[in-house]
Image (cartoon, rainbow, N blue to C red):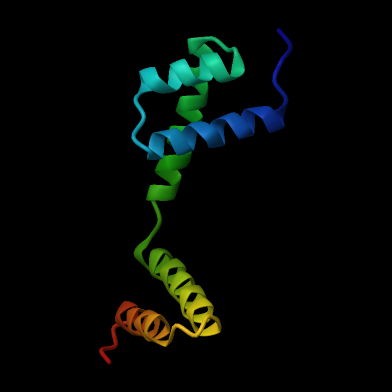
Length: 105
C-alpha cells in the first residue's frame, strides 16, 4: 500500500477530530477508518492520537481568548440578522455581547 501524503493524513486527522467531538468511540472510529481508508487499526490509532492532541490544544483556550471568539461570533450573528431584517435577533446578539464584556443593558 502506498504511503499517505501529508494532505491525506491531515484530512484523516481532521475527520477523526470531528468523530471524537461527536462522541464516537475508538471502536467506531477504527471501524470507520478501516472501511473508509482501507487502513489498519494501528494506523487509525495513530490518527486518533493526533486528533486528541488537537482537541487538548483547543480545550486549553484561555478565558479572554474564548470571550474574544464569542464576541466575534455574536457580532457576525448581529450583522447577519440586521441584514435579514430580524431586528429582535440583532438586539439579542447585542445584549449577548454586552453580557460577555460585563455590561448589563
